[in-house]
Image 1 (tube, rainbow, N blue to C red):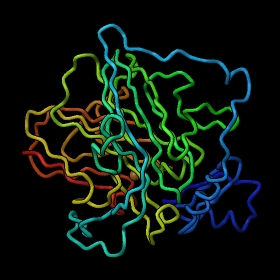
Image 2 (image 1 turned 90 degrees about the vertical axis):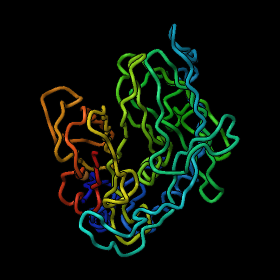
Image 3 (image 1 turned 180 degrees about the vertical axis):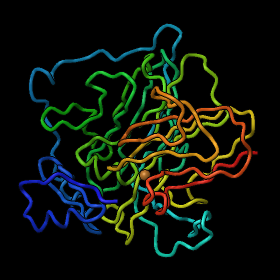
Length: 358
Ligand SMILES: [Cu+2]
C-alpha cells in the first residue's frame, strides 16, 4: 500500500514524486532528511544514523534526576536481558501460500534488526533473534527491569533504544532520542548497555508494543525492532492461548528485496505467518498491534468478541499504527479458520494466517 508522506519543503519536486511511489517514506535522522523510496535506500539512513553524535544533556530539565521506581507492596522486580542484533530473516520460508495453494516465487530473505532475549548478564541467547522480539510479562504492582544491550555489528554503527508503551516511566527510562535533550537511555551506542525500569500500574493492564526510538527509529522499527508487553491484573491466570500478532509490511527500501510483503510477525502468507491452535473451552487472547505506517483491521473467521477498547461486539476492528486491539473469547467453534487483515491489498499480499480449533 502507498504511504503518503507529508511534502517536505527541502525535497525537490521530482524527488518528492518518487517518494510518493508505493512503500516510500521519509526519515529525519539527527537533523538530516532521508528518503527511503528505492531498494537499497536503507544504507543511506544507516549512514546518516552513523553521523549522529552522542548528545550532551542540554539544560536544567535534562540535569533533573529521578528515583528509580521499586515494586509496590506484594509486587516483584521482573528482569529481562535483551540485546539488539541483526538476523538473516526469511519472510516466506515455505515459498508457498497455503491458503491459495500456490507458490510464492522470488527471494524473501534480508538482514533484519531485532530484539533477542538473553540469559542473565547477557551470557547466552535465551530465545531466537526473531521478529517480533520477546513478549515481556508483568502484573500490576511489578516493575520491569530491562537490561538492554546494543549488539549491532561495526557495519551498523548507530545508537538504539527500547521505548515501551502502556507502562509508567520517568524521563530517564523513556528510551527516546530527543536531539540535544536526549538522556542516556535514548542513545545506546553499539557495545553499550542501559537498564530501563518501567512500572506496571493499574492503567497498564493490556498488551502494548515496545520498539526502537533512537535516531534511526523509523527504519529500525520497519525492519524488525519491535515486540510486545503484556500486563495483567495481579494474580489473573494466563489465558490457555495467548499470542501477540504484529500487522506490518516489509517494503523494498527497507529490505532491498524486489517486492513488498504484507506481514504478520515478520512472515507473509498462511503457513508462514503464525498458525494459532486452540481447543474448545479454552480461554483465547489474541493481541493484534499495528506496526507500520498503515491502518489495518483484524478479522477472525467464525468468531466475535467485545472490542477491548470499549464498545460492542466486533469481528473486524480497525487498528492504527502502534495501536492494540485484543480479541478475547472462550473458544466454542471448532474448525479451520482464517485470520487476516481485511484491507484487501494487505490480505492478498500475505497478511493472513490459520487459526485451527480442535
Ligand atoms: Cu492491513
